[in-house]
Image (cartoon, rainbow, N blue to C red):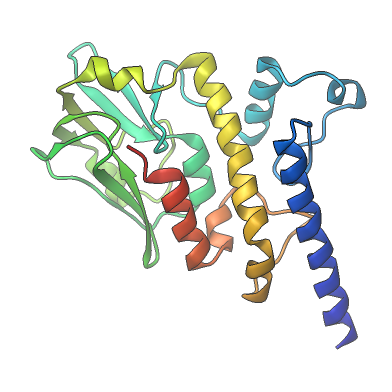
Length: 237
């Protein structure tokens, strides 16, 4: 019983520390740990800038693909010369989900509006539903992905012939704005998990090496945390 009690106390202190990190971040202070690697002492004294954000994303291998527009529902759109838009999942969502047991592809000819469900990534009985970043009609699906659990975030899932592309692109992020947005989303994901840690400890979710790894994060969390991820990060118009 004593070792169990010690582990419980350690986890409780860790949860409190994570919540403090979130509070300090909201106050505008640079806080490191959990998902964010510690920089050198000199770097930690410098204000957060674009290069440091980009380096942090590189460290987690979640730098967004080049020349794509990022939607707040964690999908991306790349416009081809034909005018069609390739649609995929951004690297933050892909890495956090981890193992994929199947992909729910849309039907060719499906009419979608921005913010409506377009496809899903399945893990066991759970699914992450991704919305379309553009209005239009599905013209092609990547059938090979339905048989591949090793989908890369740079691979397109379906193609859409857009209807209001100019308006759709105005609300998406690209280049430096995309990097800053992904960095902020990484911090927001840290906050979501930190706020749920006291409850997660009661259902058997434990920490490894002082923190939860970003890789396959959702595999380590319970159904309620998975649902929170869907609602807070993917269900965006």
